[in-house]
Image (spheres, rainbow, N blue to C red):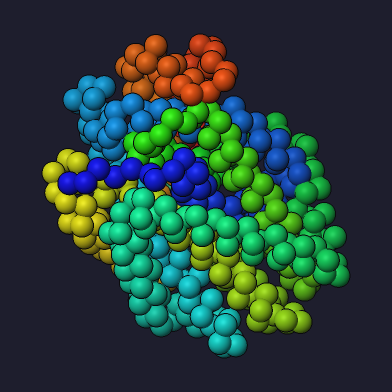
Length: 431
Ligand code: PFF
């Protein structure tokens, strides 16, 4: 089996940026900020990003680069019984991939309908079986990219994808803030409500948002770290990735709320924001079909580069654990994602498949996505920090950088991080 490696360091950094920057930045971050204290939310957001995001990302890269294995193999190297923790993570990420691909399919459908000047509504879309078709197309596309290999296909997709993303986002955001009444949107987005800062639930929300947005705790960055071939400072690479990710999120917030308020619409959250309120705003806007197409293209490209990284985890794990070829692992992983995606997709279809009153997609997001990610991230931090040799870890973290990592940083991971992860879990349960 040919070993998968990145061709260049830039390719590696761009792929990690591509994984991090996704629908979580462009669609989720803005409404989470608007709902949770506006500008004041940026305080927990940036604190968590810098304090935990940076270290956790460097840690995942370090583990991947050192063991040169998937999350299962890496954790098993620290104790064979930790294999199950890796397997748990792979199961969680495969479920997330299932519904992430479904939502990406919706985005693709809105892109096609906007380009073709068709006024499709979300209800219209989900009262048909098109979402299953669009999910299948997205899955096929991601699987084809994955089958092309890491350096040929994934690296190239991200090189162009990340550039295209910035080339679309920046002009779109400038256009949005120049619209009449965009100031009301920006006020909604950023007016700080400092009373919220003392609410632990806000910190838990910030924690969840940062980890999801940076693709942390899921073994993605372990996989991407294991493909590093050249010398590179992990701390420097992680800093570039987290800053790019945060910048895209903040700019996306300006764009989204300027669009929403310029057209007198109410800011909504979740599916309503991206698939009801915004399409409505685009349909009333001058050049709306151009702006709408650009918006959905942006969301699709961002989501596609993240989707590829999601599928990479089961692919890497299956080929490693069962010694099968990459192509077979792509097929097997896609098969499992197909089953999960169909179940998720049926939640928003004429049969409205649900668990209790909750559509299957939302249920999977709530229980497997949100809680699963926190549990997986917690297990990773605890196992790595308590089992991996401290010297090796510090060496990996400081390697090829000008500044040696201070040992104190490891205490943050060893003692503070697991406690924060536990608290985050408790608060999200309570709320
Ligand atoms: N970071 C991606 C986003 O913000 O949309 C989503 C994601 C990708 C989450 C990969 C987790 C992951 F492992």
